[in-house]
Length: 163
Image 1 (tube, rainbow, N blue to C red):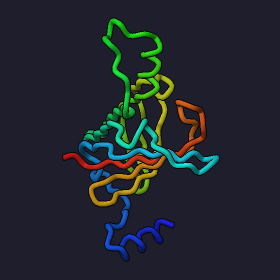
Image 2: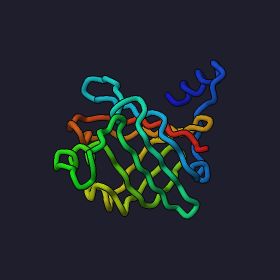
Image 3: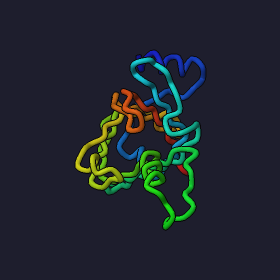
Image 4: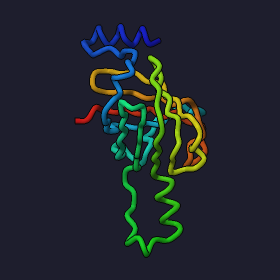
């Protein structure tokens, strides 16, 4: 399938996706799009609250990485000292962040998490299929239960090299 995509991309003058070299991820990347495919129905929707979530991922030459993402359209509480438990729940469900080490293996990147906004992720590894097309990295998750509604989903994230 990837071969067919590469042939089609070349035929239309688009840059072909390529296997990733370890140094190719080093630096800072801005989240461009995040889509979610619901496995049961095949429906594709915006993954993080809308077409323009706010996210950043950084990879260092030292093998460390950090990612932070906020859903589009998050509601700002009146003030920190006036925040309700419902506000805190909403903010938690529409945000994620973690840090750890990373390893690149041609068509996948593995994040081994040692610090996370969600302690359930601390001590785990997050594996993403990855392709590089020009200045973009395209990550695809394995199917998992989405934290907001529990539906089995696949997330596709498009990151663009910054600046």
